[in-house]
Length: 263
Picture 1 (cartoon, one colour):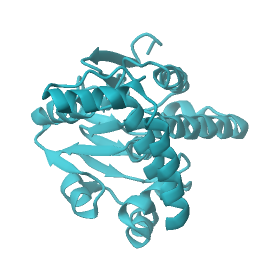
Picture 2: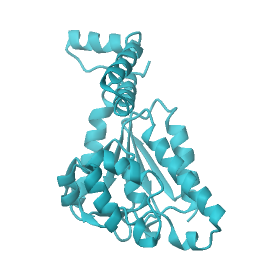
Picture 3: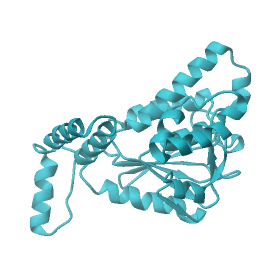
Picture 4: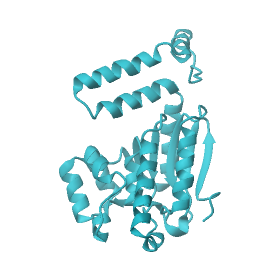
């Protein structure tokens, strides 16, 4: 798969859709895709026209969000190359998590290993009714290495995360909804429209405020409540001198839709 089409981009009304496009390989990650994806994420962080991001998988073949690492490529790697691969994919997902824009995962099918780890790095996760997901690495005598052991317990709880990882268990999206892994589960034909709908609602809000809210939530979860409140206070202070804050007040007063510029 060439660099040009392993990751598709479409920007519409401030919502950028990224589609993993390796359908013949169930949208798994080879090094080319990781490099293209990583460069894309670095660019997005500085693009004001992007207000929110939706990540999904190509539906041209078997429905798959992503089945994780390209095991055929992995089989030919030396131990050092495997270490480099793991560091690369871990850094990519951290980059997704740290984007200033809110990110929505539209899990449209299989999401195993790195596929589920990518979804866990997103802010909001939606899934199709036919999606099946899991961190299945222990069945291959390794462990989740791109954030799964850290993010899954924070989402579904320690006991459930251990059970899923230790058993390498694959679960249906309905079960993921019960665990709090997914915000919503919808019919396959409704998944992307619903993700874009939520993305559009997000994109209508102040970009600086969105970035600071995301920062305050993510960083606040890792510290005590008093420290978290201090983080929130500092994040709020960033929004005070912005043109967008003045615009929001003016739009409210004039009973019109605000036009935010991210300034």
